[in-house]
Length: 501
Image 1 (cartoon, rainbow, N blue to C red):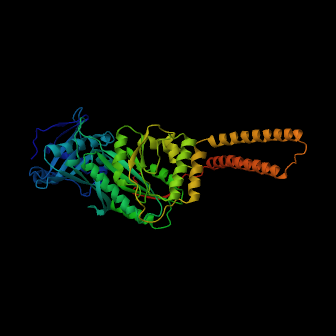
Image 2: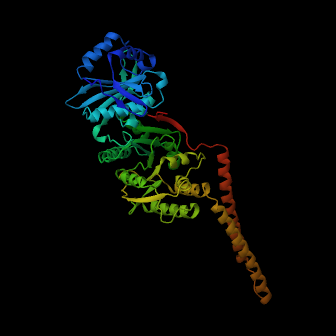
Image 3: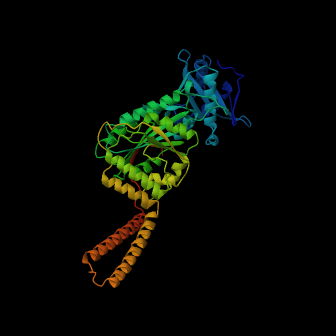
C-alpha cells in the first residue's frame, strides 16, 4: 500500500496519494462524457465500485493511484495511476485523466506523467511501463511521447464496454531508456526520416527496417532519440504504395503520403516536409544505396552545431552516367548558387527543423532543395559515409530528368544565366563589330581580297544561334513565372496514412 505521507512536487502540480475522501470527485470525473469516452470501460462509476477498487487493488499493492493537484491552493484536477503491477516482471500499466475541464491545455498531464514515471522507476523499482490510448486522442499521444513513451504497435478494432470499436496505440517506456536531467527528465529528440519513393516495392521494407534497427541501437547507446518515417509515393507505376500501406499498418511511427501524379524527387521531399514533426529531419533514398545505418554520423554532426549535414561518399557506386550528372549538378550549384567549392551535396542529408520550416515557405511549382538549403543557412557541413551498390532495379533519373533538375537549379534560384546571356551578347556584338572593321581595313589595304560567302554565312548562323539560345533562356524564365502566377501546384496529395493532422 502507498504511504499516505508521500508528496511529489512539480513546477505546477503536486501528486498526493488518493484517499477515500476523493471518491465522490473521482466518480464525478469518470462519469463525465469527455473522460468516459477515453476509456474502454464505460459503465457508470459507483461508490461501491470505487471502494472495491481501493480495497482489492490499492490496498493489496496491485495498483498505485495519485491525485493531481494544482500547486496553488492544491485543488484536485485529475488522477494518475499504475495498475496490474507485476512485482516479478517489474512492470505495470499506466493511466491518467484530467477531470476538470479548465485544467486542460496547461501542461498538467505531461508534468504529472513525468513525476509519476520517475516515481515508478526510481521509487517503486519498475523496469517497464505500458499504456493503451485511442489513436484519435491526439493530445494524449503527444503528451505520452514527450514523456518518452514510444509506440510498439496499433491495436485494431478494440471493443469498448458499450460496443463501440476503435483503434488504439500500445505504447511502452523502459527504465533503461529513461534518463533524468536537471528539470526532472530529458526530452527525447524526435528524428523524422523523409523518403521519396518511386518503383521501390522491393527495396523499401529493407530500408525501413534498417532505420528502425539504427534508431534502436542509438537508443541503447544512451541517445535520447525517438523517430518517425514519412514515405512519399511519387505516383509509382508498381505496387510501392501497397507496400507503404502495409508498413504503416505494422508501425504507427510510419506515415504514408500518396501523390496524385509524378512530381519528381524534390517535390516529393517538399510534400514529406509538410508532414514531419521532428526536431531533426533526415532525407535519404528508397533504393538502399544511402546507408541508413550511418544516420548517427549525421546526427552527431548536427549536435556539434551544424544546421545542415550532407553525406559525402569516398567512392560512389552509381553508373558513369549518374556520376557525370552529379558532377554537373555540383558545378552548377557552385557557379550559379554560390555553393562552397569544398561542400559536397547529395540526396542523403540531415537538417534542423527551422531549416525545413523555412524551406516549406517556398510554394512555387519548381522546388530545388539544394537551392532552398543554400539560401537558408551557411552552417552546412559534410560527413563521410559509405555508398552501396544498387541491389535491385535501376535509377529513376533519366537524361531528361537530370536536365530538368539542372534547369530547376539555375532558373529558380539565380539570375546569373540572364547575366551570362547579357555578357555573351556583348561579347558577340563586340566580336562582330571588330570583325567588320577588320574586313573593311583588309579590303582597303588589299583591293584584290575576295569577299567570302562562307564567312558571311558562318557569322549569320552563329549570331542567329546565339540569339535563339538567349531568347529561349529568357522564355524559360518568363514561362516559369507564368506557371507560378497561375498557382501550379508543387505537389498534390491523393491520400495519407497514419497522419495525425
